[in-house]
Each structure stands twice: as C-alpha cells, then as structure tokens.
Image 1: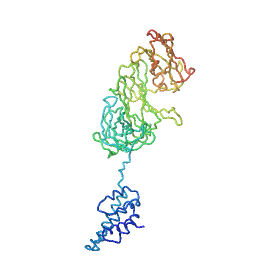
Image 2: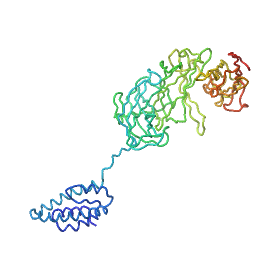
Image 3: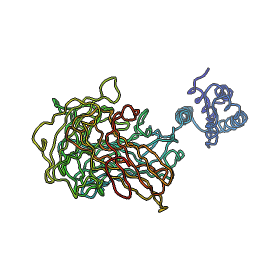
Image 4: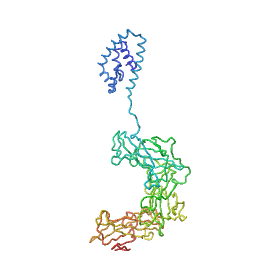
Length: 530
C-alpha cells in the first residue's frame, strides 16, 4: 500500500509530464484517505468534506480523474519540450507540499470552538443599590446576558458567590441570577440568550463593598447534586471584567480561634423595614468549615413593663453549590417586634442580645450542642459587649410544662372581619407566656376555641406561635398568637370560649395541662369559662 505522500508525488508528476504516473494515480486514490485530485479549482475539496472514507471518494471521482489524467498527459507532452528535468522536479516538490497541506486541513476539519461551559455569560453589569432594609444599608445588583450552548433542565439556576474585601477580612454572599419569571432558563433553546439578574447582600451591609470577585456555577435550585463552573468575574466598584481578579480575593483563616464563629459587628439599623420596632445588622466571621446542619441564632430580649419580651432571629446560611470557608464572613439582618401587642412605641431602650452557635449532635436529628458566641446589650441605641445586668443567667435543667412553671396573662380575643366585607368573622388570639423554668424542646402551647353561632357550637384547635419555648430563660416572656375559623368564617358569635393548654406539641390530650380559660361575650373578656 502506498503512503499518501508518495501518492501525491505520483499525482503531481502526472500533471507535470511524468506520463508513467497516470496508472498509479488510480491505485493511490484507493489507498490514501480523502485524496483530492490536484486541479485548478477546489470543487473536489468541497465534495471530499461530505465523504467519510476514501472508497466513496474514489468511486465518485474515477471518471473525472481519467479525463484529467489524459489532459495532463497531453499538457505535459507539450510542456516537457520547453522545461528541464530540474524544473520539473522543483515543480513536483512544491506542488506536493501544497497538496499535503491541503489534505491535512481536510483530514482535520476546524472544530466548533470549545467553550467548556453549557452557558456563556457576557455583558455583566454590577452596581451598588439600597438593600431591602432601607437606604442606610447596601446591596449589589448583577445583570448579565446568558447564552445557552446547550439546553438545560428544569429547575436549573445560575448560582453566584461574591467574595469581597472588607476591613481586613473578606465578606461573602451567595445568590442566583434568574431569568424573567415569564420565561425561565430551561425554556431557552440552544443558541438563545437570556437576560438574567440577581441581588447579593440583599439583607444589607453598612457601606459599599468592593473590590469583589464573583464565581458562577450552573446547578439545581438548592445547589445540591452536580454543579458546573461557568466562569468568574471581577468588580472594582466601577468596572467589571469577566475574569478572575488580577490580585485574587480569598479568605485567610485565623489560627487558634476559640470559637468556630465570631460576631464581628452588630448595630441598630434606624431605617429598617415597616412596623418593626428593632432592626439589626450584623456580621459573622467563620473560623471553621460550616456544616449546613448547624445553626446560628440571635435572641433578642427587650424589657418593658417589668417583662423581658423575647424574639428569635435565625441566621440564614444557604451556600448552595459553594462552600463557606474559614476566614469568610457573612452579613445578615433581622427585624423584631413588629406586632403592636408587644407595646413598644419605638426602638426598645434596653435589650439583651444573645448570639449562639448550635452544633448538631452526631447521629441525631434536632439535637444540638449550644455554644455562646457573644452576649451583647442594647442600651439607648448603642450596643456593647456583655449582658445588660452584667451577670450570667441561670439556665437550669429543662423540664415539661406545668401550671406552676408558666404564667399566662395579657390575653386578647378579638373578632376580625374577613377580607371582602361579607360580614363574617374569624377569631384572633394573643397572650403573653412567661417561664419560671426552662422547658424541653418538645413543649408548646395550644388553644381550643368553642364559639356559639346561632344554635350551633363550632370548635377549632389552634397552635399558638411565638419564640420557641426552649430558647427562653427563666423570667423571660414570649408573646404568642394564632387565629381560628379563618378558613371557614362564621357570623358573629354570641360568645367564644378559649381553653389554653400546654405540654407536648402535637401530643394527645393526656400529654397536656389546662393552663387557663377565657370567655369573650358581648365584646367583654373575662377569665373563666362562658
């Protein structure tokens, strides 16, 4: 079998007067993959691209080759009389090299540019905006074009992590870039471009953050399972480039930290949301890998009228397909005491703020080890370290609820007209519950409402919600609320009786104790049964 290079020399020789090469040309055509005949035009090259093997090519071109060989012979006979053997050899060599180069291009056609990512981001724009908690705190808004290199599945999202320089450490946040809800990402076909946008640090930071490095991944809604890197970007506060920052922005883990989490800062946000009386901004620094099963809480206990009212803030940590690494910090916000029943006219004057890190016990679900991160005191708008009374609270051993370790007061029962003004009503319930002992995590408060409507008695059970009772220290109070008959409203009753019961949440009647009964009759509320 002849090699391709030899065949090309034979083919070229046939064109240049080596008349004996014509017969070998057809042999070479069958031996050399995708051998185009050396001609003055490239129409055969186009045809060769459509064939997958030399046998098909030879069959298509056999007749054309024979005709051209004869023409080459006649041309060579005439030309051979005018040129020397040396010139013929030079022409053969040059034409052979050119033919081999053309064959190499056809044997390895130019591949489609390999992007390495199912989505290509472009035209990325980043700017600082006000957060959802008001103009005194800042967030980052991102907008980009996302071109699909291939179709993506349902519930597929572009996840983004920002790592930003901030006062000697890095501040991070994770979010999504979403297409318009009328046409989500999975609805775009290959080759189409979607406009995507998202917000990071939406809970707010005290000032602008920059520079920031962004990492983008394509993955499922929650970020679990497989995810694909689709690029990085850098923002210096003004301009954006679709590449990693020249000077990488990365966390530096501190060695010898006493706790896995540190409260870097906590402050009152005076321009917080809506009716909330207390809005807090805080930053938490991680000194160890964060396990998503672990939790962080900020308990707020504010004093009014001899009581210490408790509300709880759960710190949301959802890194999606990314990892929250040691040395990285997060910014969060919480709002408290929006309900008028707390009785705060404005920002509370005196509050204990307790930040706790809860580590899930190995092999359990819902059982945690408690580690105090910091106790703080809000006094007249300023927050300092330590409890307001300067002491350490006595926690005691958690137990079950009894009539002697809880006190129920400040009870309110109120008829509320249903939406639409049909004249039908439902019943709202509110009360204060104060503990004298710590309670087990399974303890809760419920109410059985019995209302007389005409000749009918209607009965419905409600589970009252407030701060989870096992977070309360002895002497602390939670306001609990609920409503009944909201899903099946009624004409205004003659009377309603509410029986409060405490004990194991969702337990049977035997698991609960009777705490108190209240009766609402003729718009008047009294302690006791109706």
